Amino acid sequence: MLNTSTILGLLLSVLTHSSLYSQNSILYIGTGGKNATGIYRLFFDQSTGIFSKVSLATKVDSPSFLAHHPNNKFLYTVAKWEKNAGVIGYQINDQGNLIEFTRQACPDGYGCHLSVHPSGNFLLSAQYGGGSVGFFPISEDGILSIPVIFEHEGGSKVFPNRQNSPHPHWCGYSPCGNFALVPDLGMDQVVVYQINPERSAISYHGSIQSMAGSGPRHMRFSKDNRFIYLLNELNLTVEIFSWDKNLGNTTRIDSVQTLSDQEKLQETFNSAAEILVHPSGQWVYTSNRGHDSVSVFQTHKNGVLTLIQKQPIRGAFPRNINFSPDGKWLIAAGQHSNTVSAHHINQKTGRLTFQKGGVTSIPNPTCLLFEK
Image 1 (cartoon, one colour):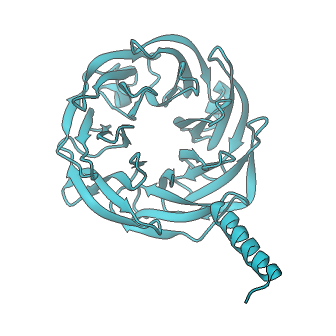
Image 2 (cartoon, one colour; image 1 turned 120 degrees about the horizontal axis):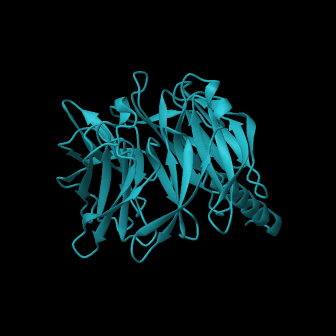
């Protein structure tokens, strides 16, 4: 029979183990490049900022962007196979392994981004090369159906080699879930679609005009849902728009550079890649390829942003960045350096500090997705 001290010791051991385990989160890494063979996974220790050993979660060609289903049981990726390209869905088992259970080809080719609607009834994919958006219905058990294609038209032609035709680069949803928004690099616009929740369908609603030659790439809403932060790839700026959630309309407020003109001249190539809003809503982070850094901005109640830091990622070509589930770390994917690095977020100032030893090797990382 166990005595009281033994029982207390066992309970303490269990609680300590549970506490340590809760600090470890599974990180899935999408990839795109000749050295990569699929989606990778590892554990990230949120108490230390250290990565575990990397393993291959599933073998697949060009899984460059990943997205969770709202039920957190499914993970979807854009991908290629044989002579096709489209979306593949995986079940996530109790160990965090990925088991394919559905795939659907896209008639307009390979997508560069995808996003599942909060209802879980459909996902959208952005076909950069095809100049279109793919609407994929999703059944209750996660199965993908044949997509409906929405073609974008036109091009601003400010940069002939990039803007002669439409190039959708991201797709997401308004916080209320009634609108889908698609930044189009080639058009210098964000195309807005109205969502019909009863029919799980979308229809063209309007567009948001960005600066000429800016090349809209990715965007996020402010925490209070009043503002849109639009990241422009070509001129490395963040444009700020007010958002009318009832009408789906915007008014341009301001823009801010992620890099100074002098810093841009230091590299032969620079382009903005990813934008995030911290869970607290106090800070915005953008990644700069070429300069290989993350720019940190303070948010203000009127939507305006103030640049407060530029943090080197300790790698090259940060195509994607993401937060750890506890919001205390920013993880940066260096696609050309084959690295993923951890940077601690000061919870009072938002400033980043590189974690010594917080770097690991991944072939051609392009997307970072934590389990929910």
